[in-house]
Image (cartoon, rainbow, N blue to C red; front, side):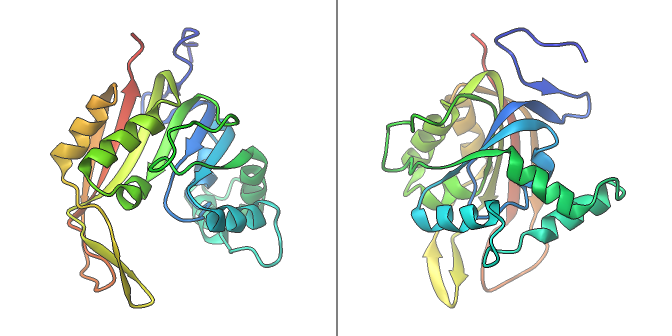
Length: 225
């Protein structure tokens, strides 16, 4: 693969796989399942959490403590998808080693970027912006804060739920910002990125614990000028 210029460090294969030196994960919940494949494309991973509870749980997994949440399911699934080339527990260990920091940053309340959070080649965000943003203006502002950590030419990989109004945990209903496809796409553009790919995955099941019409996936590139 031909190397990119110094201001465009992120690499992308013809199939659309994004690779680079460093990635920020900004996703809902203290989970490592989605980071198992990410460590194949990125040497350094920085996990950003908005509260201390998630940080504590993630650190227990990172340190492989006995009372840590079991994330082996994700490693086993990826092991199968790759044809068993590498044992699942080896994949977990590689992911632990790739994570260089678990950093607290509640971007909805704090404009100051943590000193130990570098600019990166890619930001992966799964549903957390939907949860922490109180309204659409806040969503746009939070997205801009988050993508300020992207290098020019770096990529945003964003997942949001469309037309979702609530989710339940132990019978208690929680708020989530209701979003539509056009608004999210325009927010990404307003943040200074160029959208490269959009996927909409319709909901297939009805469930009284959560309501949404579809999952929106966007891959976008930060402008270099």
